[in-house]
Image 1: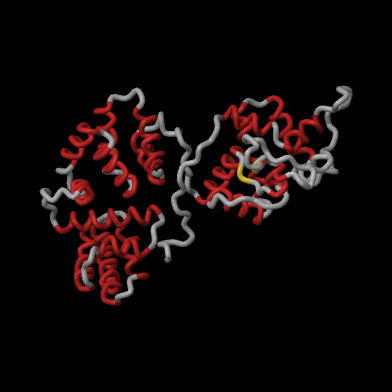
Image 2: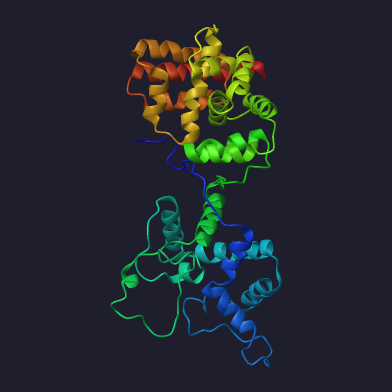
Length: 370
C-alpha cells in the first residue's frame, strides 16, 4: 500500500533510555574511548601524553585522526556527563554517517529491531551494539586471543546497546527532522508539548507518560490545560488530547469536553470523535472535522487508502464528490494535503476531479481571504 509521502518517516514510538550519568559511563567503557584514553595516558606515567592511537587496531585506530582523538580524550577525562554525551554524539555522527551502509544498518537495528550478524565493526568500536545478555556492555573489538570455537555466543547476532539506542535516536532524528520521543521526557513540559509527544505512543506507554506528567498537578487544572491546547494542536495531537480527556481524566475531563463542544470547529471534531450526535454542525464545520480526522492519518504516516476510507465512510462516488466540494469552505490548514491524496490516489475519476475542483476553489478563496 502506498503512503501519502514515501519519503516521510512514519512517527516512531518512544524509546527508553538510561540516565545521562549511565550513558556517559557507557561511553567511557567503549573500545574507542578506551583506546583514546590509553593513547593520552601512557601506562608508565612518564610519557608526554601525545602517543598516537593504536594503529594496529583497525576498529579504533582509523576512526579519528590524532588531533580529534586528543580532543575527545580530554573531554572523556575532564568533561561532565552532558559534555561527554555531546562529544560522543559528534563522534558518532562523524563516524557512522561517513559510510552510508553503516548508517543504514544502525537505522534498521533501531526501527526494525534487526540484529547484526558477523563482526560488529565500527558499531562495536563506538559501543553501539552488544551481544544479547551482556547487560548493556558494548561489544568488544580488537581483543587479543580468540574465543573457543564452541562458545555459543560467537554465533549470536548483535543487538543495539542502550548507548546504541541513544545514538541511533539522535542520528535518525537529525536526518528525518522528526524528534523521536524519549519515555519520561515530558513530565516538566506543557500540555501542548505533551500531546505532540504522545502522538506515537502505544497505549500502555501513553498512560505511563501521562501519569508522570500528572504527578504533582491538580487533575482539574491539568484537564483544563489539555483542553486549552486542543484548538491550536496538530490534528493527531488534538485526537490524542480528546481521547485522554474522554478516558483518562474522569469527570474533570468530560466537563472540559462538554464545554468545548460549543466551540466552533473544535466542537465539531469532538462531537465526531465521541459520537455526540446532539451537537448540530453546519456543513463547513462538518467538512473541517472530516479533514481534521483524515489529517490525523496523514500526520501518522498512514496509507492513502486509509485516508480515503476515512472520508468515504461507505458513500458512493457521487456522494464522495459532493463531500469534497465542501472542503474548500472549511479552511482547515490540512485541506490541500487531504485533497491531493484524492487527486493522486482515488480510483474513481469523478472523485479525483471533484478534489481538483475543490483544491482550485480553496486556492481562490485563500487569495480572497488574503
